[in-house]
Image (cartoon, rainbow, N blue to C red; front, side):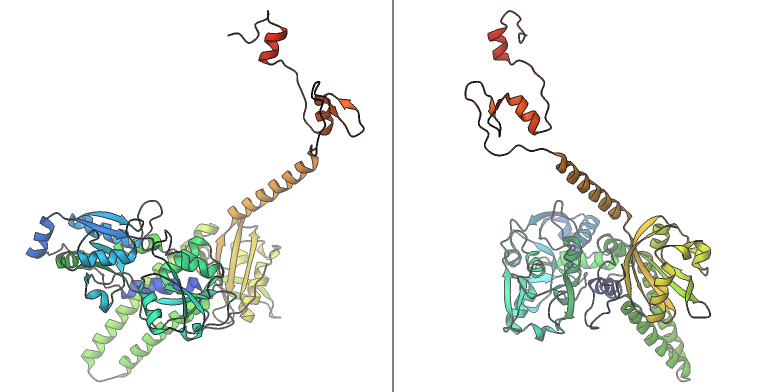
Length: 531
């Protein structure tokens, strides 16, 4: 079914787009680029390692940074495990059921019970009582609201409204101190799933908004299925970057971790991020925002290159700058290409073909990603530059009218969202199409064949059960039964044998036997039940 609804306001950013931008932001800004060289430890660091400490690490649920449902895992845990194993450091987990977040920070300050936490926001107040490693996870704070909520463009629009927060989190203190006009609904740190409560309160309508870490919140939205929650606006706060917080009498451990982070290769970090941050295009996608954003970056870079090329002064500096920019563009292009190829959804860019009357009659494949090949079975080298009627003969007669629908998108700029069966491919797809420029359209799609089959089987099962229920005869009401002979009186006042009555009023059939007591009483010589 087509969906042509336009974005009502450019400030309504979708969760998926911000998730994507956040991934790129992590990749670009991470300081841990690594040189893959062996760590050069100081004598003090080696002496600390020789003491063979067991580091007590407090962990709490903060998906996907830390996941405590079942075994302990997540982005931060993968970093921590790699660094500690690399340096032969023993560690022990202390869970949030044993120590709350506020208690953990207190214990680190007191040098007892808890030695460190894998993720913490660096603040001036905290730096008075503990040490921090370099930041290694990067994400902004954003405002989340429900899809049906009033327009929110900034944090000023939340004054007088109720916002959910987690007790002891930095954002709790910031809102309490800087925005007293905002009503706070605080999730107690003593509750088992207190990190999930604020978002659940928003989804269920108990609060008006939630301010949270983009990575953690979008991950939870996808995993919990809160489809009525959206990203409404940015916040005036700095990014919610994460570092490891450590007791302040262990500066050697801090420097060991920082050196290990710096030595990690880009490939090692990418594997960790790709393991936990998957991109899914399912709800309200505005892919054109991404394309415009990328083109803006390239455009700005091109301006710099143009300025350098037009200038005749300081030739040496010009060449150096041009090479630096070209290298930066090359790396950026590599990052975008890697992200494009690792998308879980199929993506394809096409150019529409029209006849003399301007009617769409065909379209040409311009670009596809690896997921497109996997989902459709069509290979890049076999279809790029070719018309769809050549690649999939007969598609122009398909009842789904793929060419007509996509032509409308390319010519009018209207977005389209629908589910349809592709006869040439033999699969069901959920499709979102948009036009990045005139006469071109892009599609992002997901294979939903398995879900469709489950739905059809469910419908058949429901139909079968309904038909079966129509045929079932039921016994109900008060049945008069003789206390001696056990006959039942029917509606007409006649007394019938119980098996006759049940047979006439249900689908049950009877066969006769004899119980153990009656066998002994009436047939003692037969020894029917004797071993």
